[in-house]
Image (tube, rainbow, N blue to C red; front, side):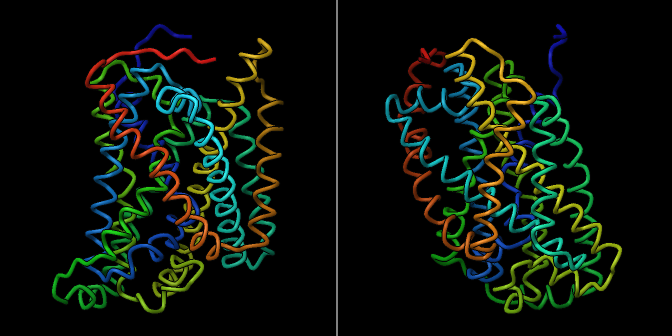
Length: 373
């Protein structure tokens, strides 16, 4: 291991890019989550809900990174042992449900993309995603972090181009959608809070990358940046989506509806490649967190390293189960049903304890260590 101190990219930007990777998966990248939680609030209400979610994400990322540094936690198990004590097992159960649902969503989205773009059976897209995630997580932290960085370049570039093309093609429809009185109702607050509630778990999923943070200042800076980094593409997508809100509301792939309106086959292919890459990095982040959790227990109990083959087999077993669920339920049903239940559970087990007990402990003792059995 090199003695060189990590640079500002690893300390300030990498956590935000990893957090973006954790939250931008199947529903966000395809537009399905944005349609589910923000379109019902109308254009200005939807923007207010997105802003609220961004603020919640940044605040919770700051608290999470500070608490992780203070407690010495580098995976979600040790984090919740420090935060909840023996109650950490309740989070373990909620997280298991979370991983199953989100990986099933990613699988369903990959299947929809393969079917919409190439006319392939949905199982082909699922298998391609499963293979890609298994390969990346089998090599551990370094390759997963490189995936976060490279996919981010592709993702932000494609979304920027998408905004330019959409404004040129149907900018008048977007303007008409926003040419209404500004109204922010309960739908905006509920949508923003619910969406932020189940996605904020991404801050715990990416704890392995916080090993680069050298100080409390790094934790605060990285946390504040994480919210906007993760939400900028959602703002772009939502603004464009408002032009065809009624048509998009129930579509499994809202992104494909908008791409059809653009009628640019090459860009449509590029966009769906980007969505698949986003699914790959999100899936890799979720499975890598599980592998790190298992690796810690493996090392503690057996004194052995959790190697390449073990990581690959663990990832593959988890993915096969989740893809079977995706095939049975479908993308729209998974997001509409499973995500809201997850949001309430994670707010109760993570957001509220960290914002109260966790904050109190940080104020009283900025640095503390918790013995992990």
